[in-house]
Image 1 (cartoon, rainbow, N blue to C red):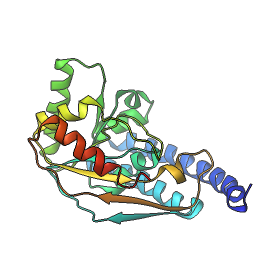
Image 2: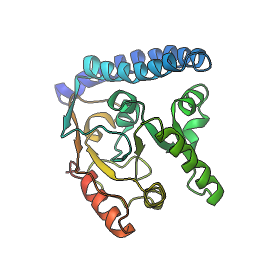
Image 3: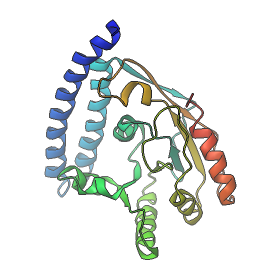
Length: 232
């Protein structure tokens, strides 16, 4: 075992202790504020994400780089999903993101309640037409606050070096919301996916905006190619 791998063990243990103990404080703080002070609640959620970024930088030696970043409302960001890093990092990376997430995440005690109030929209893969309409109505309501929409079009974490077809729900959301898409590649897997996390650089690469209204085959092909740009 290399020296770098040996050092990753105590680094990772310190990270887990610091981040998860801090998460308890942030979750309790967000629950206390969500019903009485919306701005304060949102600040705490963003603070939790920033705490994660700080722990990753100081304890794991992970730096974040952005290539051609574009931040704007009225857009559906389609992001490659390799690890929990980018999922936790979203409130730090974007301003008040509205995230399409697995419905099971909203069932986590405390965290799920905070996530739902912040703007997570639960996606059930077997949801019927009524559930889909409810989900899109909520997305449009939150979009009216000039908040960006975020989706992981693969539907789950995919190991670095692998490619998988996009979930059918992505094309349906793209069609019904009639929004342009900005694909975002990310290469967090080699550093963050394992139990013993490695130091290095995680990159986000923002691709060119893709217009609304394209046929399903074309939008899926273009997004799949763009989000895999760092997947080598």
